Image (cartoon, rainbow, N blue to C red; front, side, top):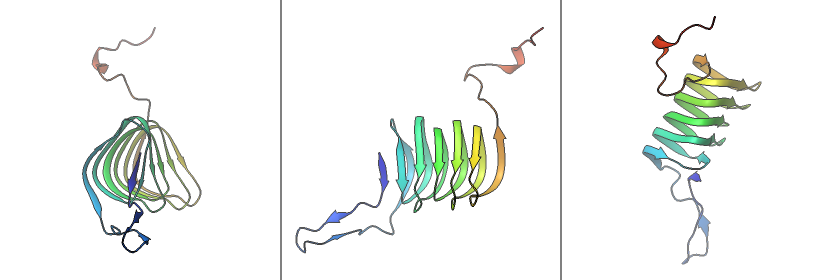
Length: 133
């Protein structure tokens, strides 16, 4: 799935164009498949069992929950990744990261807090966990 500024074909003039360069998508995005964002999004994004990619021209201010998150553009918010967050060269991230793994390429920018730990099962109560002897 792709969220961004579509190229539209104008039947009258025969020209293609991007009429919504200033459009901002605000709200809650929920995807049951991999999702790529090539535009501006604000709110919350859930791609629970799939990968979220922020394209180089993507600008996102959101709380994100996904299996894997790949950032080429700019993202500001709280990230929850079951597997890994990958910050590519030229990407910019500001906020909190909670993930099992993190890759920051040379030239990637990050500012915020990082918690790299495997997630517990959703209903696991850690107060009842006995130490292994």
